Amino acid sequence: GQNIDQPTEMTATEGAIVQINCTYQTSGFNGLFWYQQHAGEAPTFLSYNVLDGLEEKGRFSSFLSRSKGYSYLLLKELQMKDSASYLCAVSNDYKLSFGAGTTVTVRA
Amino acid sequence: GAVVSQHPSRVICKSGTSVKIECRSLDFQATTMFWYRQFPKKSLMLMATSNEGSKATYEQGVEKDKFLINHASLTLSTLTVTSAHPEDSSFYICSATGDGYTFGSGTRLTVV
Image (tube, rainbow over all chains, first blue to last red; front, side, top):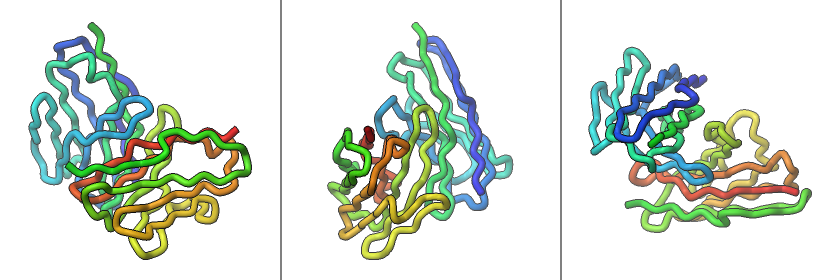
């Protein structure tokens, strides 16, 4: 089975940095994705990790350690529009299994 | 980039009726499409995997006779919720594999 854990909620100040952790236990692994989802909308792709290490993409970075079953998403220079739910998803046999999502609230 | 169009975005139907949701890949061919449902403040739960020209593969606990999936072409998959009941009210999202996983904009189904 799949077990993907991430914190439920996080709050941060505009301009700050927030790190969202994700731990997973899955029967197989083809890669790990991070998505952003605003309420009532579809998820939008943020990052993808298949090998260990850090992937940087503008203000967003994602890290993966396959041996530890651990990933994090780093959001820098937070903006109000970054308030959303962030979903960690693991690809296994090319099907995605999602964590419950972390709601990030950015305060002025 | 890859675009997936999902229609309708919102639908309200009476209990006992059927609702069809369409998912189209606009600028790429999608051999495989996935259907998810999402309850408020919950994660996306995979319902089924749809492969063009073959029967869909349903996840455990998903009734295939209730959630009919048809993937008749490389660009279109449909999900029909048959004999809908209020407990079927949810947010349904499709995704297609092309350049990674691309999601449709979702369908908010309300059964009254």
